[in-house]
Amino acid sequence: MGRLVWAPRNALGYMARESTLRPLAHTVMKLMRHGPMGFEKPALVDARGVVRDLSGVLSDIVPATLSPHGLQRLRDIDPASLPAVEPGRIGVPYSGCAKFVGVGLNYADHAAESGLEIPAEPVLFMKATSCLAGPNDAVQLPQGSVKTDWEVELGVVIGTRARYVSEHAALGHVAGYCIVNDISEREYQLERGGTWDKGKSCDTFGPVGPWLVTTDEVPNPQALGLWLDVNGQRAQTGHSGAMVFGVARLVSYISRFMTLNPGDLITTGTPPGVGLGRKPPSFLRAGDTMRLGIDGLGEQFQTVHAWDASLAHG
Image 1 (cartoon, rainbow, N blue to C red):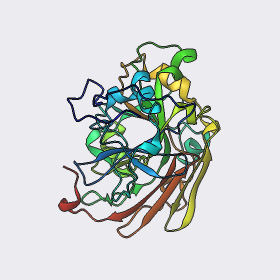
Image 2: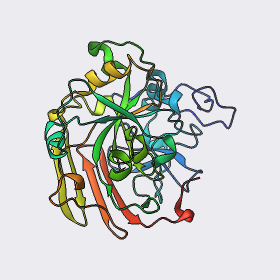
Image 3: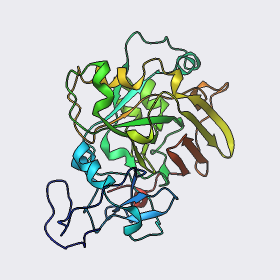
């Protein structure tokens, strides 16, 4: 390993090194950020599950880091050469997300429990990036909310620009995958007129992480189990293979309506078991907890709080 030199960073955020890094045959690529909100530091998780500090190598995990070249630079680092850290708070696994695109009704059984038809084409909506939160951050109920709901979903992070890409080429534009809890206020979403965005973008309604897992660790995004527990009771169980529109189809389709840039995040829909679909419907209350996970992508845990301005991000 070359000795680290504290020098100006290049466009990818990397510091200069005195010598070429030794390539490894294979490096587990689970990227994460940890630390107080607004002051997160970059890290990776090695093959033994040890969190390794990357702040001596790059200042942050940004969209440019997610390019093929940027990820290869990280793969070329021997994780054992990096200091081990004990993370406290875990943040969103990268910064600079410019678009947070949602897909609705992408599991047939979820559409059925919602009383809606299976869509002929993907249903798209936007989540404001101000709703992004760390995977274990507190979830706040909006003021006056009585219908806040849970949704475990597979997140897709774009690594290279995608514009009118074919379905065949689409996965080549993906940097990696993550867990998203697409928290939704159903009254705002369905009863207040207009588009779904109203019920999808409230503060803390976008927990992401704990990791961004690169595509070499997830060779088939349609082979992942998803689950979510509310107050220790299983609410959702699903499999990404049951999507109406798979990840490649979604990336290709969305790229026909908007250019997808590095760092853009697509959340791909939820399996059945949401509160809206229960009989009678059941929604989150202050003090409730959610634990959710996806095969190979880790777990999240959130506690629900009444609105408290001190907990608001930013």
